[in-house]
Image (cartoon, rainbow, N blue to C red; front, side, top):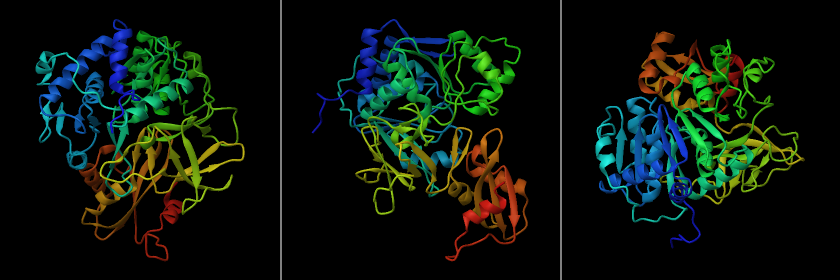
Length: 479
């Protein structure tokens, strides 16, 4: 039974902000500025345009385009229709995009570049502007999915995590508390692609509290500096490579970055004082917490309570976080196990898969006696390069499609700029070159996933079961 009485959805948030802060600027996208009332009207027009094309309750709409204001318009429009937006990774190859669309099974696909079966979003702009701005006659409850995000290609094929209104609103409230959002005063720079939950999490939290957010989906370091100065940005999602590049771009201090005080990262050389001299950021000491796409970001926070043994802080006040041994038995303090989570922020499930009574994260962790959490590593392998996750299985499948590759093992190796880079250790059955294999993988998967280095070996090490011994590969070729 639909429970609207006890629901508060993203649609409610958008309507309410338009009513109480109609003339306040909510979003800055390049030279365009949108008030909360503008955002509500645009969402209504998109919703009515979508409804005229039979999009409704339970449907999914795929967006293949930049992380500009249209992503938010479509997210809010989907919220008003009881549908879900699925932002696609525009860096993916055509082959990967086709697989993603097959998985998502959207009712409608919008794209800003040529894509089979998609509607040209740019060409539809006049029709959307002409659509009615009336509120759609649908009132979904907050347990419905509103956002679909691809994640976890451990098996070689990503899954679609379905995030609900309730989960996003809950995490927005928690994020506001722990990321120090000041109602109406925080000016947030959303730097990065909108298919990452980390980019829009704080943006939506800031929206909920009446703050201004600046979109910067594909900026260079100089552009980031200009935006921060122009908009007096106070908070930003930046990663170490971007920070290092900004330090170089602003070495002459031509841009005033002193308004910036909240960034959950630090320069690659923390002892270099330049970043802290040009901004008002405090020196970061380590991770800010633990989370993943399926939990709509953080479920533990370094800021929750006094510092302790674990670098990933204490559980969120609205998340039941556990660490369990195989079989689901709770691990003792100090004993590693799989991190599990239960709470309102957990996804509704992967599309087409059943949901358990606790979300198993696939990550190993350990609780210390003082209640703090440490992240040990994935149960299965993942390589974090910059802000992207690369799953070895995906790269290995692409490599094995080359006729000269008998077997391949993909690992992450330390990289001073990106944290990790992708290395392929290849057992070749015929002669080929590293450049040939790198180009081959680039044709089948996104460029950021391709190996940066290739090592050819006569035989890959194997365990007693005859499987490639990934640990031995790491030990021998992982540095």
